[in-house]
Image 1: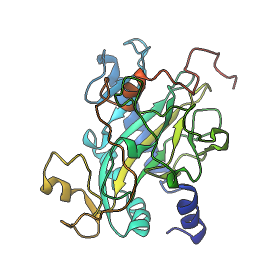
Image 2: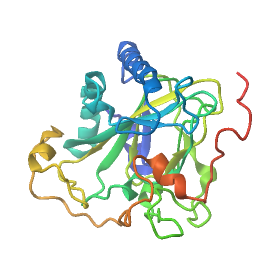
Image 3: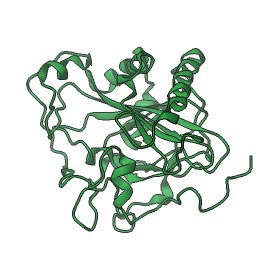
Image 4: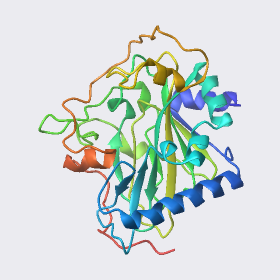
Length: 296
């Protein structure tokens, strides 16, 4: 399904955007379920096992920034996580595919929270780095509504320290100390139904949505069958193998010579990357509220 140009771009840049993978009907279905979840958030006052809320959330004005593990909470999200086209694309990259987990990040118009620069690899290192996140655009992604920003080629570089001054994991790098050229960042833009695929070691982040348009991004994490989590899999081998989507299970993890830094001691604030990053004082992106919503 991938062209030679797309394969080369993924290997060289560490990410690609593929248009029109999900149909209009599939996107409409996903949006409808998402609207239901946001509507039900009026009953929730604090973060829980399903919702990660904006700090300005209230019952009168529900503001959800993440639905955690959406595939566990609705069959339509579960079906999207196993979309045949997505599995086929990843199988081309690795030969086998195992599902990991997912989240739905939502940047609502005018206040959607930023995510500081980071590498997914810092959160869940494995025995090899044949891992990627697939993002499904539920809305059109424009330069103004906080699209994901990628640093091309950074997946071939170092694994940066994601710990704070106190020595605890904080899920964000120090933008002043890494030597990363943030001016080279490329936004992932596309129409609803497009997907992104980015390598687990790629440096990326996203700015506040200061536009008047929503930006909802359904993200699923995948790995090759022979990539095993270094911090273990608490639910046992049967559950681990039940997540296999393509290829054969194996009890022989592939050990690759890739740099690793464990996310320990754990972050002071748990629950999501938003909570992890609360403790970092080394911010790059402007938070919501510091300037007016962009005119549409």
